[in-house]
Image 1 (tube, rainbow, N blue to C red):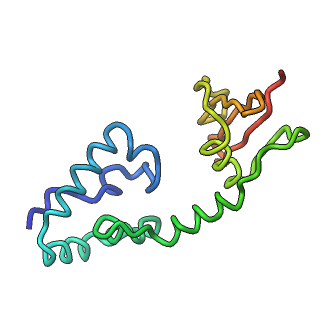
Image 2 (cartoon, one colour):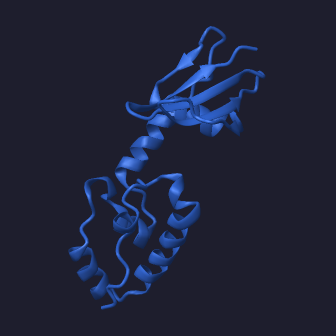
Length: 154
């Protein structure tokens, strides 16, 4: 068996499954190369490979996804939670911190305007525009994690 290709989570341990990092840059290139290589293996070699490189907790269902396209339960659960949080901002809201609601807002409701320089202690800073013309600043705390949207003064 050609064991030259290590699983994606070994080569890029800081990129979690589902991250944009797998759709851009070096992560995307390796993901595509690895997927093509893995799918080309005979079934017996795939089985040996999967036994040698067990899926870490956060990657459970990965091999099944690559082989069949079936989304893992955790991903389906996340989709459900994001869909349930589909609530546009109300006029009296200035800060939104509920994780799944923030995800829905930045994916489905708001339009990204630009990336800003993060302030001290932030790992992400972006501006979004709502359909009502209101601007929102997305930020992520570099230490605590989590995301928040803050209404910008008009």
